[in-house]
Image (cartoon, rainbow, N blue to C red):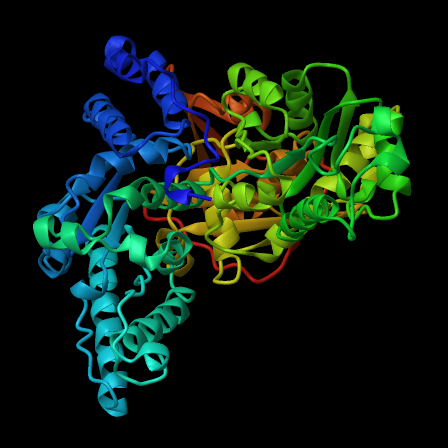
Length: 634
């Protein structure tokens, strides 16, 4: 499979360039249309064209993410392609290129142009030619010192960028070189270039897991396409291009999916078609015995591998759902009775098997799970169904699939829909948490009194300040929560780490358990001192716990901390976005009074002295003693 052509994407429209020319007609239409174009299989020139058009549209938009690019090679041609490719992963980026081979000068000088731009992310697009990796075959001590020096150089660049602008640095592993002087001994002999690169990458992976920056595994990407194809000596000598132009679309896609994951845009749910997708044959026609599945035949093993991949994704927290035009009882019978089925009904969070159109069923799946349709990936063998869903629900990711089912898994995973920047315990348990949520919904459906039902859940909220253990999940929630998010402010893991150490701010991470299980971390609150008051900078909650009176419990707890710290009032801020309309009345519902109201922003006040504890079925427990900030002098 030729991954450099992004084969999981649908073909671009025949009038692609005409559609690009029309982008500036309307800002709202431009956002929608540019994203739709980015979702198609664009080549180097098409991505460059779209990226330039998008850059013109977003040049004065302060909400667009700023991405700095530092490289020992020439990246001018890559920058527009990065801008276009990040659209595919739900983020708008303004990419900023620096001069050729100016890494140290731009990073280490706080007054450099790049540092003055205060980028959200900086990509270190550096290969072996940009590091002090001078080969010294057979000289073991010198070889180890060389690797250490290269690692320290990158660490100094990272720290300087973090310090100057608070950005998140994307550090990439170094692609191996295809040239070998010693043949099969090349990586066994300390000091050869291949040995140095291999040891540097091992050291980098070890270092990066303990910091707040991101790792782009470019070495793995080069191996995927082949190092001989990745490196183009002619393009390097002519223009100092760091890798072959043919690999740029795939490289930019990997950068885009990483930034998207850092901003909470990675997909959450894999929706599976059934007939000829996870088994061979049509159960309504062929019956249970006629399905092709399992060991003993190449086709049966191919479908078995699809189920194995689905379970592996579920084990790391991806929700599984079914969407099939089928008789429900017949469809379920395969899960219950076929001896070769790996997937069981208990693995499926939502099971939609009926004769409605798939777009309607996908909306129903998203509604049931209380996630957006932009969190869904549909795996479907039928090109007609794929086209219909793309047209009706362009937010849903629908990979193109080859004719051979043996290639389905490779295609799905290569698309990177489920990219992650960290794997937390909450991630591993998330699929089970959604299963439990379905059980809660079923219990609610049979209840006659909501308050009685909520108390029957035996909910327990465990509150604690930000800490290193919770940092990845806190950052994840901050960057992916859109609906129950009062201000939608985004903070990088580096910035969250700074908040952990703040003596003046209140930080809370909240976990929730009930009789159905552990919901994991479901809320984040950040308060900063504002004279004698506390300003609520961030208050967000997972939509999985909506309408369960958790917010009342959190407010009771925050007020108790404020009272102990001598705080006069809480000031709540609501910043309207296109996604958080559901919490517009959050503060007035909790008893706050208006201070200032505009169309896009409102401020609300809650007097601590006159506050009466709100009734809530949620028990609140402090996990640790929380050091609270005292009020500043009035």
